[in-house]
Amino acid sequence: VWGFNDVTTASGIYYQLWTNGVPTINTGPTGLENFDTVVSLAKANGLRLLVTLTNNWSDYGGMDVYTSQLVGSGQAHDVFYTNAKTQAAYKNYVNAFVTRYVNEPTILAWELRNEP
Image 1: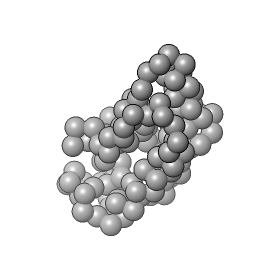
Image 2 (image 1 turned 120 degrees about the horizontal axis):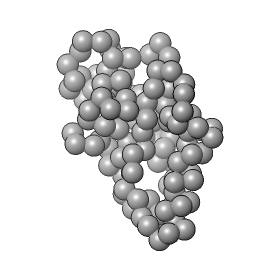
Image 3 (image 1 turned 135 degrees about the vertical axis):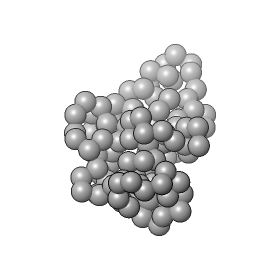
Image 4 (image 1 turned 60 degrees about the vertical axis):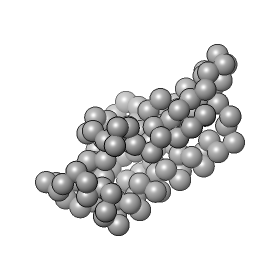
């Protein structure tokens, strides 16, 4: 299950909004409250979830949105791994997401990145 959807314009379901290099985690009904529903439905049906927290590819934001928003467009993809700003922003997102579900047994595991 994807635990990420980074956008630069608030619309539809999204978990993190980027505005001028500042990420804001969406905890409302179009954000993590929506993910709460995913977790509840999985639990009700006896399923366990592996939650992926960002994408290696630019689909739905992914690592490139961190790099372009915090370091600048045109940067190498792997700057995500070495830049202090991208590391801090990603750690903040992971902390917020994981802390929200820390005691939820429906979540079997966390995947830091899809296809790194």
